[in-house]
Amino acid sequence: MTTDLIHHPYQPPAGWDAVPPGVFKASTVIFRDVAALRARDYTAKTGYTYGLRGTPTTYLLEERLATLEGGRFCILSPSGLAAIMNVNLALLAQGDELLLPNNVYFPSSDMAASVLSRWGISHQFYDPMNAADLAAKISERTKLVWIEAPGSVTMEFPDLPGLVAAARARGVLVALDNTWGAGLAMRGFDQGADIVMQALTKYPSGGADVLMGSVVTRDEALHLRMLKVHGQLGLGVAANDAEFILRSLPTMALRYHAHDAAARQLAAWLGSQPAVTQVLHPALPGSPGHAHWAATCSAAAGLFSVMLDAALSRAHVDAFVDALQLFKIGYSWGGPVSLVVPYDLGAMRDDRSAMPGHLVRFSIGLEAVADLQADLAQALLALG
Ligand SMILES: Cc1ncc(COP(=O)(O)O)c(C=O)c1O
Image (cartoon, rainbow, N blue to C red; front, side, top):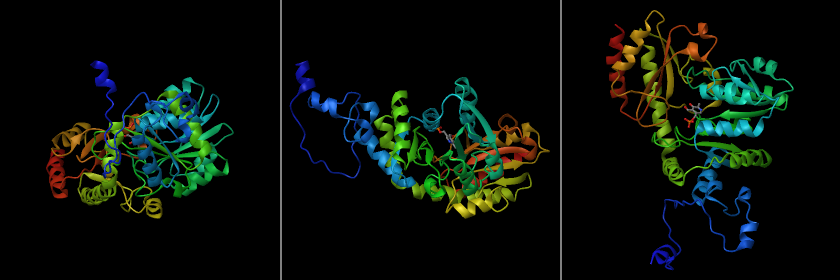
């Protein structure tokens, strides 16, 4: 009886056809015979070998994401940070050096300072607003340059062509974290990147419910280097998570542009408030790197920061953030709920003196803009 429940011969009719893709879940993949088992190679995606190596659901998502970025190959990892680790561990070896922008996503520099440095891989920070600084820091040991556009807290938009040209001139690989651009405001390969990474956790998910990362390439040999290490590290993703992203991708452009429009409106309004000394939003004139953004991007994400007056105390700033009702206090971005985080720049940057005041970052969700503005207005009263 139990065996019949497991090996029941009924097969549903083939040819199920519907808009949503199927969700295939398995650890074991069954081979027709030993010859099939011996013949299959997951790296070419011509067959399946084991759930960790890919399923019809994850292959489908990989193809769509490669298309989104204008690339050919895609590797999925269980988080954006895991995708960054996949790139680093595949391309760096003992004695190599990694260059990171000085406004890099903090866990990425933390990984370099702890994990990579223990394995004899050094790193240096460059000024993303100064391509000559990057050029000067490239040495024989430099094997990889990461770029973020913009920095996801301080929001400077770099001179992408200048940075890419500096790395290219020395034959160094360029990896672009395009989580902010999402393949919509800009496509990484149009900018000359070799590797385009995204935290799918943000806009491709859109639901604040899935963690995932992607690494897209055009060059097959480079892709295979990273795919091999990805397999060796066991970085597969779950089919249900891939399903969520596949469900969200068709609405991503609509959501992205709605986040963008609302964020620009709120950022401009905040800029008119007396307590706000600077708005850090690359699409707004006066923001660091605005001209670079204008030369590169057709849109912007729903993420921006403001500097609050240095004369305010930290307690005032905390009271402002605590007073917000619709904005929830929390990390990440790209979801339907607006988020806010006060950042301690001193802990993140060694050049804090260049940015006097208190930085507060907002991720604008999909609530009505008027309600968000009213929420900000009532909370600003907490600043006295
Ligand atoms: C710019 C950027 N890159 C990468 C990541 C990492 O993504 P995840 O949270 O999926 O690990 C984040 C997360 O906040 C991010 O902001």
